[in-house]
Amino acid sequence: MSVPRTAAHKIPGLAPGIFFFGLSLAAAAAPLDLAVDLFAEGQWAAARTEARRVQTHAVAAEADRARLLAAISALRLNPGDESARADLAALWQAPAADLETRCMAAYEFGLADWAAGGAQAPAALEFAFLQTRQVPLFWRAGCSLYFYLKADRRLRKEKAAVWQSLQSCRDAWPLEVWRECRPRRPAGHSLGSRPGKWIVQFYRAQIAPAIGARCDLEPSCSEYFQQASRAHGLLGIPLMADRFVREPSVVAAKEKPVEMPGGGIRYADPVSDHDFWLKGTP
Amino acid sequence: MVALCAASAWGEGPARLALDLSAEGRHEAAAIEFRRLALADPVATNAAGWFWLAAHEYAQEGAWEQSNRMLDRAEDAAPLALPIPVAWRRAENALGERDWTSAAFHFDSLRLKADADDLREFAARGAAAARLREKNLADARQALAVAPGDVAAARQALDRYATGRDKRPWLGGVLGLVPGLGYVYSGEYANAARSLILNSLFLWGMVETATDDQWGVFAVLTFAEFTWYSGSIYGGIDAAHRFNQRRLDGAVTHVRGETRLLPDPMQIPVIWLTFDY
Image (cartoon, rainbow over all chains, first blue to last red; front, side, top):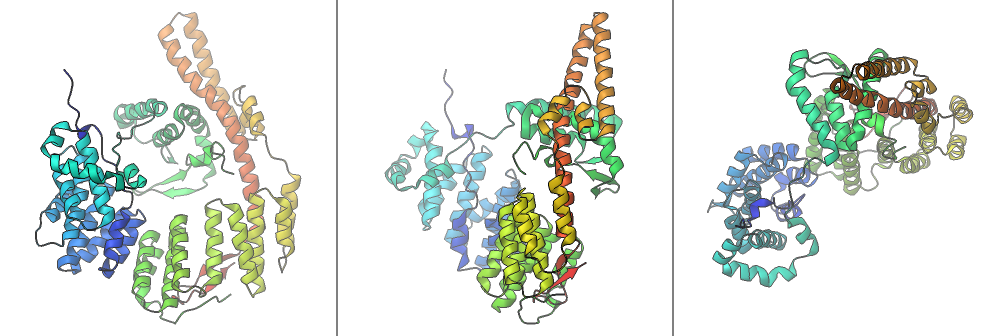
């Protein structure tokens, strides 16, 4: 028996900076300028803080936009953020809110819900696709919905009219929109980095609790190994062995001291100091 | 001391929070406060000053791309207001990004724009350091040749670097086949001793367990020995690279000298750079 294909097998593509958000807000909301700039630069935490700051002082439409930006920034920081998703859903379904704000909230909620395996994604994307007057959002909502329906035959039949409409306008979507919205498999660790990950997980779960923190360097030896194996696969093993051999000398030299948040001093010995020549950097 | 560029003397009052955050080492937060001031300030030259300060704070965090973006904003706000501070910040950012060619270009640009000898010397030393990082000794010497003031110590450092010899990483790796010898090649004797002892212990353990037909333990020790042995080879190569890097860093430090530029917080948003000797 064949398993029915659904969109839940893959996660939706994510627009990296949703530039259209900035375009649509720039003229209307000067207090949000800084938050929008920070968002466009990918400084999600700062953008969220700034948007919340505006939200506390603003009223009506401006407060909704600030709430929207705060929620999207929170989702960029942590894609599984439930409260951010709830905020977006509330904004999408708030009839008093500005229509474009609702459409953006619906679109972002649709993507987040899709990634979380929820069932409301098609309705949210359809709302954004049918209601928005912003061309970039119209393209993206349509393209994302197209991919969603393409992977779900049953839903495609239920939404035959929307599918027909998506089919007729798909030729207008630019290539970058296709690339942005195309669903992809969740990123995982590379094959070479997996043994390193397993070893570190075992060490942290079974050995470290018994022997305590024994590394005087920053990052700690287990973190160093994880970073090295993530960057270089199995080459992380000699990198780690080299570090074990060097550790007493680095501590004795007392160069680059780092004050740790919980008190105490460690000495900086980042992976980048020992693989810069592998990357061809002078 | 050298005064550079200007806006109106608005004082540090509105920037108190940003300056406090900066003093606490929270440079990103300080940068955001400066950006807020820039967006709120209707005077273009002031806005440029605030953006420049945001760029400076981002640079303290090593966020070079953000810093350069803020310098662009400063230049967009008031195109001719901050030629020297912007050139200096761009040069330092390029050094931070290891883009030596751009760093040399911006230091050269700073030297041409500067009207004081101490600033021209600072810029020439910076350009020479960037050329030295590129391993372009001829251009580094040429950069120092146009520097006003006494740069004899910098020239001597360049000469010492030119006459010294780098270690060959491939040779370090080959010598590392004999545990510890790669470290010895680069003068790291303590590391060499540790590598030799560890490899010897595990090899001895392998031989003993093989003799006693304890093949399970033998397999574990072999894996561990493989780790130490590959570490010896990698360490031989890396030690040579570290040696070369330290030699280069030492020469660059002498070429640049002790002088550093800093913005004076008492003057902001006028960007007033002072030398820190």
